[in-house]
Length: 231
Image (tube, rainbow, N blue to C red; front, side, top):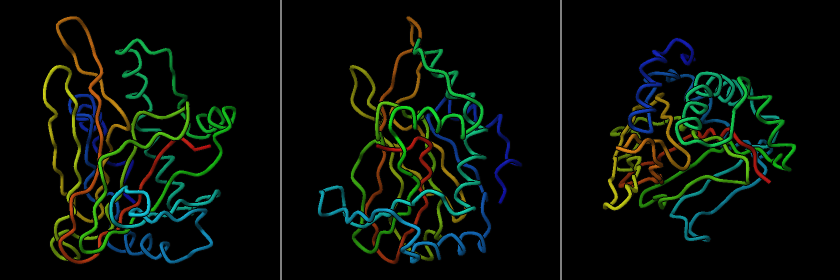
């Protein structure tokens, strides 16, 4: 697993400038295959959501139980420790009275104190025709302003279509769409709800949502890493 060896200065700059960043080759093919196998181990999960039943899209996703599988837990901890400082910078820029601790365990204690104790990391599966409508992953009053998704299949080989979509809702302007197609083993870090943007009178919030475009063929699996727990 190649998380801590990435160029985090570059990644942090991308998060500040764009609201997202890609860690290339964070997992190798064998590690992706190992994580994929978790999907069929039903005892690891607390809840399965069939997306079309709720008009979320077409596909399904499963939330893990605590304790998380070791690989998922390590990803969650390592990613958090590398981006919590960026999250704190965002809060300062936007004059928000929130400060995130340096360790994930400490942050989850804050979630627990606010009755958010359910695991939020999840696995998602889409077949042909599958998609995920634009949304934000907020599960309570306590949330971390960034999250991550690990791409477990190879686009163009295992599936076609299924691009990751971000939209920016710019004040007094039309929304901007960003379309990304990371490779197998890449990790995409992106904003949960908003990012700061510098204007003529200081920083303001740019609201963002994310989703997945239609999968044309094959099967697309991802691992979602959300840092706050849910009620």
